[in-house]
Structure formats: structure tokens, C-alpha cells
Image (cartoon, rainbow, N blue to C red; front, top):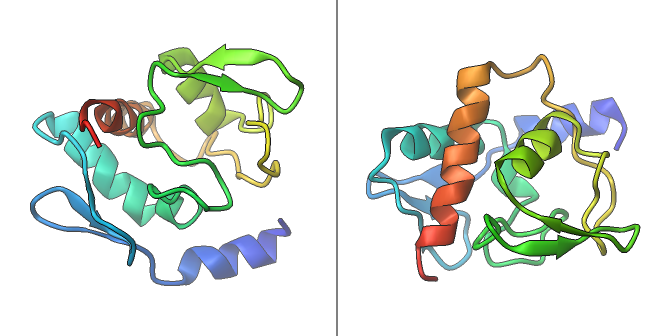
Length: 135
């Protein structure tokens, strides 16, 4: 995606994290396990960075849904299987083109140098919490 198009997309209003931890994307509500303060902070960061614009929890987004991702095995575009553990999530956020999920275009921007180590850990905690929701 050209940088100008991405910046224009990023500036458009996106989903909202409600006080109960649910995410209002205009799609069915998904509630993460946000009892963990790191996951709650990650949820807000996920929204403020515009991540939910591509990673729609109900699926069908430009990027894969993150609902139930943590701990699952995903097939990459090159056919290799990858377990979505903390290392995979970290790499996918910082170097998203290193391993692209099959069926999705390699359009995610890198957040290397854009977010702090704490923010990276918050995003990972949030994604991990999505595996615990039972949805």
C-alpha cells in the first residue's frame, strides 16, 4: 500500500474500545479477556493505531482475524506452518513481511521504531487475551 494511502486510511475514524472491553467495529461485538492491565492497554493501542481496520475480529478484513490466533498454527503464503506464539507476534508487528499468512496480501506496515517495547508487549498481551475469550 502506498504510504500516502496508508496515512489517509490511518486518519479515518476506526473502531472504538468500549469501557467494558468490547470493541465496536460496526460488526458483532467481541469481548477480550481484559482483566490484565497490559491487555487492556494493548486493546486501546490496537484501536488507536488503526489495527482493527484490517484485522476485523469477525474475519473478512484485509488482514487475518486475531480472534483465537495465539497458540494456533497458521499456514504461511510459502506453505510453511507457523505457531502463533509470542515470537511470531513480535516479528509480525515489527517485520510483517517476514511471514505472511496464506490468502492475505503483504500490506501491513512495520511498527519497528513506531512503538516502544512496552507498547509492543501490550499489543502482544491483547492478542493473547483474544485466545481466552471462548468466542
